[in-house]
Image (cartoon, rainbow, N blue to C red):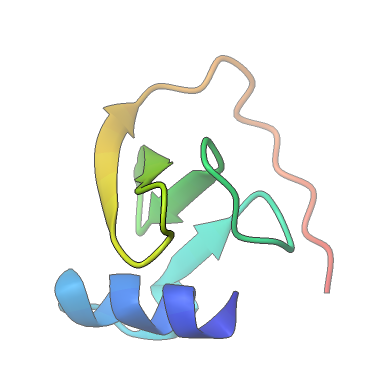
Length: 66
């Protein structure tokens, strides 16, 4: 997951600390928050590339797990 977070941060010109995900494993459909915007991850079948689609979450309560 760390390489994915670093790639997203690099692609969006933010630090990795500004990227938050809702899963510990990289799978299709996870949510990514970059600063204050939420996105759904769409992985390719091979998993070597992704697209982000803007998402709007219903419940904004976030529980951080480290």
